[in-house]
Every structure is written in structure tokens, then in C-alpha cells.
Length: 212
Image (tube, rainbow, N blue to C red; front, side, top):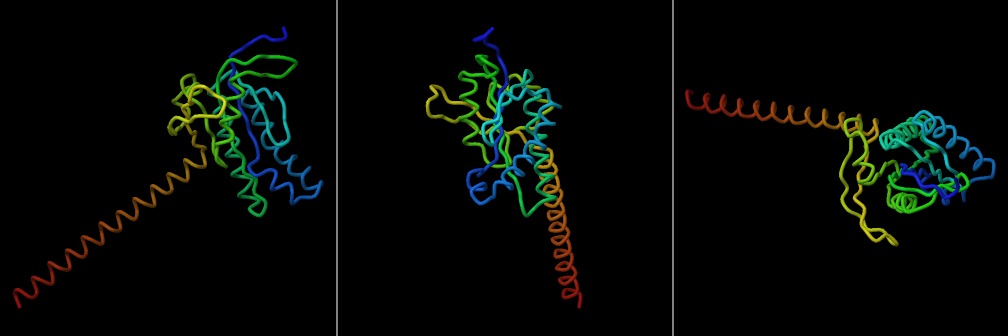
């Protein structure tokens, strides 16, 4: 029935700096950019049971019944673009993902309402290569499956109440952090070894001078 309401998890995905990027491209290159974008995200939407509501320029609006699947979908998307950019460093595509859970109005294969508005506002502040999601998503999702960081409260124009924001870490970001941690541990170990060697040298030097 037109005008029915349903609680869904709403996702927006768009290409960062799309207007600036396409202003420097031919029509053929713009079409190729969209083909790459679509080829990367559409299989992931399907795999995570996301329903594509519509595409507006470079912006996808997708709905999920599962908040957990929505955030995992965002992580998969960022991993896919990381792999693509690693293989095509001269023409990188950076995307951002914003996710919110709430009641939507369903009408003519589209969705409306505050949940959509909140997700759209969140998209505006989401940095490139990141996944932001709201406290509503956080409360409903399986927290054991998703690595996250609390980003604090954010007030948005046109919204009465502030929204608590969280950031999901993609798998490649987690691997990068682990490599950084291993590197830091190695540096600490080398510093500790160096300190021991310096102390040993000083002790040896003092003993030599004392006895001889």
C-alpha cells in the first residue's frame, strides 16, 4: 500500500569530489567512471541483501532490513575501492558511506522520511574512504561483527536533536593498523635493545677504568 511505513537501515554511497572530477572528463570517461562505480558496488549490495532504491547522479540510496548487513556492506565497499585504487593509482575513486536506521515512508518504489534525511546529512560530513553510522544503527547491529570507533555527537541543520556518530573500520584499515602496531613494537624493541647495549657499554667502560 502506498504510504506504508517500515523501519529500515538506510545507506547513502557517493563518489567524493564527483563534480570536480567529472568537470575534467570527456563524456566517454564519465560513462566509464559510472561503469566502474556500478560494477564495484552493485554486486556488494546484492550480496549483503541491500535493496537499491535509486541512483541520483553518483549517489546510491540503498535500504537494508539488517543494520549489521548494512555496515558490513559499507566495509566491503571500502575494501573493494581500496583494491581498485591499488591497481589503478593514477585514477583513484574515493567513496564515502553513511548509514542510519529509522522509520521510512514507502511510496512508488521510493522511500522518504526523517531516516533518509538523517542519512543524507551524515553523508555530507563523512570523509573520503570512511563509513559513518548513527547510534540507531549501533544499538541494533551485532557489535561482535563490526570494529567501530565512537566519533561523538553531531548537530545537523534542520534536525531537532543531535546524532551520535560512529565510524566502522574497513578490513584494509584494520590490516594497516596492525602493520603499524607491529612496526611500532619493533621500534620499541630496538630502542630497548639499544638502551641495554648503552648501559652495558657504560658499565664495561667504568669497570675498565676502575680496575686499570
